[in-house]
Image (cartoon, rainbow, N blue to C red; front, side, top):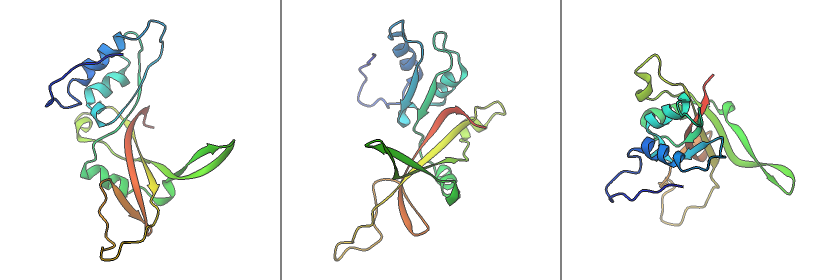
Length: 171
């Protein structure tokens, strides 16, 4: 609906709120509800606050699911999630509900950006993890593999994990 040509050295998250408002203005008039899903480029807190506050004159409160940067503090919060709090995600195939290798859990995390005020927003942070298949190590390579994505080991099993704050209010 909206595009903007930028110089190559402009970060993807630069002025996201302005760009989002301009994109909303491009929507047809019969659109009554909007939701936003983004990677970490959509994580600027002014954008999240705008969506959550209901300030948009046309759409009111806009639900969102946005990736968050993984800080050391957030990693620690994910590591503190109890094993029994991880919930299995299911897929539907041929009309049957099947268990997947993915699980989700709510993470107790408040970023510094919104923790500075008693009136800061409360967001739900969710992490998902996917059990990694065990693979044999090639001869001459050590078993301590390095992966280009976030992993963690719980009870001897290695997981690939993901994260996002959610625009639903924390309880």
